Length: 211
Image (cartoon, rainbow, N blue to C red):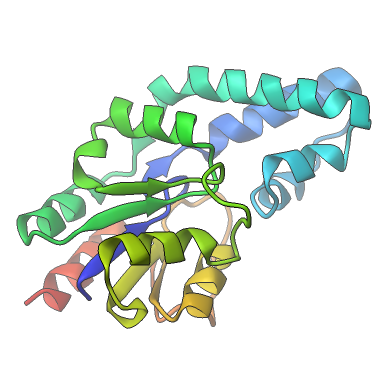
């Protein structure tokens, strides 16, 4: 496991509540009920496609712009999950190349990495605006593997969502399901090679894997 790739939202940083609040505000103002199933559904779909499900075509660009503006504002308040940086520091101490593979746009992803101080650990960031095909398509991961000059079988991908694991499996890499964000119950993921429910358990496994 020579190269490590991390999803951003829900894996490295605790950001979902901010995104859900933006959607709930916009939905409510428009008279659309923000139902219990909407938060999880919103993470399965790229923002433009998700917005288009609920708003007229002429309003889609306006809503997306508002989401992006508020998301950029929120980046300064987003924090890493407790224990995550300790693991990144440990990997960095072993001179292991790391990258971020996220569905978020590159601008806000870069802002989050800068504000949290996590940017220093990553050599490459591939976002949803860097690819033609979004997760679970492995295009972004394949870009990273090519940059690192690594083999898929030597690459570990850590992500909180099933779409992360599906893309990882398609590329032939090792999938680790990060199940510590706590916004809903995390069922056992059949597409992941490993799954951890706390950052402490994940760190212990990383430490043992690098011995």
